[in-house]
Length: 278
Ligand SMILES: [Zn+2]
Image (tube, rainbow, N blue to C red):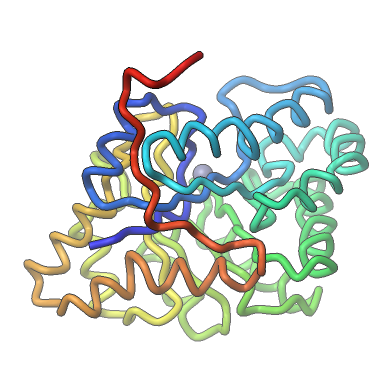
């Protein structure tokens, strides 16, 4: 089973993780721009980070047989610093136009503040102008209120809904997204929040159309092979191979292929470890 991982933060993962992902079937992954775990203070720190996920991680992924793409944004958590967000967004165009940038994200809300919303709306329009997909982060606290607010903003701004992925849904919010023309993401975590079994139950209840499952693995407790575990749990729950393929391959391929820039190479061969140079 070939897997496309639609949301993972490889910058914070080791080469062991790339190897484990390849073994589990991952041949392509997409890395959204997000918070680094400590606050940034300068636009230049964002720009260097964008270069890193657009260029260096592509090389690193390729060495391990995984075609790596990125999404670029000022993330919601740091968007609350209005001046930093404004000056960073003033210089973000060249990164959004980079050939490996296939999406604007993560954008959305963290604490649902006015500043977060201003950066969110501005970046929605940057995506719309470029006809790029959009990855929307939903708050971990007040998730339902955050998702409702996101949907109101998407409607008010008249964005192209099939290019939107509202991510990190739970049982509480998935029903808000399913009736819309947008995509609904779910993040699998090994211990807290959604585990593979809960994702499978949501898929049973809400169907497979426009659903994206991801590991969102970062420097927190997370597992970069979560999609393989989700596939195994789907199999055990009676889903067919075609249905499993739809969730772990066809859907992420369809979502990101809305930009011509996404042309995943699925036949990369991992290089022998001893050939790697620093
Ligand atoms: Zn993320």
